[in-house]
Length: 202
Image 1: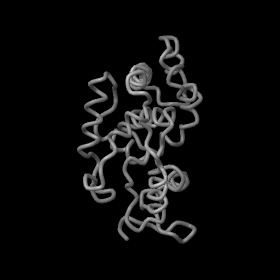
Image 2: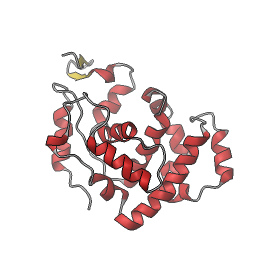
Image 3: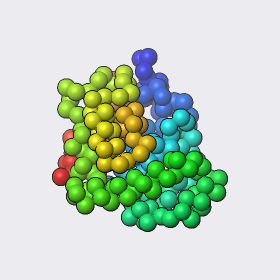
């Protein structure tokens, strides 16, 4: 039970989601469930990049502000951002005003447009890096993996920024490429069932 806590409904959950009230709905409804939507996948990669050096609580509490500031993380719209947009974002107190991270989002949107043209979709590309069951570590025992290292390396080769192996691993956990809910967590089976129903895009 070291990795678990009893939620208000009496069912066990991953211990980390007991750290703040807003974590529980995120844990129960999003974290670890498979995603095939390019916009959501791109948003999560961007937000994980913004989290670097910060807490996920900080990012989660600002997520709606990020969505408003970055046009709902519409890849093609962001790819056309100019220096005026960078200055606009640097003046937005509702987000993390870090020039390097803001410029990385714009750069990565442009790289995502290129990648989509080559691979069909961002989702099709990313799901090719889903590890096989034998490649995954026990739940919540790792912060990087061979597949997160491989994906990070390939993204960097394609010109992406703020996509280190730890950032990519957190992205894979959140987007359902890895089911990292703790053994005994009430949501682990739900995430597994969602993955069983899910057909990765090609």
